[in-house]
Length: 66
Image (cartoon, rainbow, N blue to C red; front, top):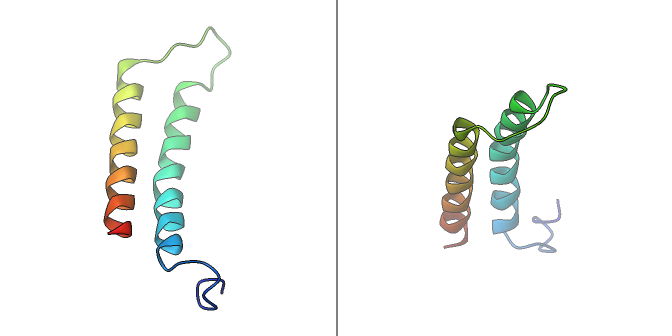
C-alpha cells in the first residue's frame, strides 16, 4: 500500500522481496550448521553457500535499482 500511495519508491518492494527470498535460505543454512551445542566454527561449505546467497542478493538488488 505504501508503494501504491507513493510513500515509498517502486524499487523498495523489489528490494524487500529479494531480502525475503534470499534471507530465508541464509537463515536456514546458518541454523543448520550452528544448531548443535558444541564449539562453533564455520565450515567452508557454509561460507561458500552464504557467499553465493549474498552475491545473488546483491545482483538482484542492483538489477532492481537500475
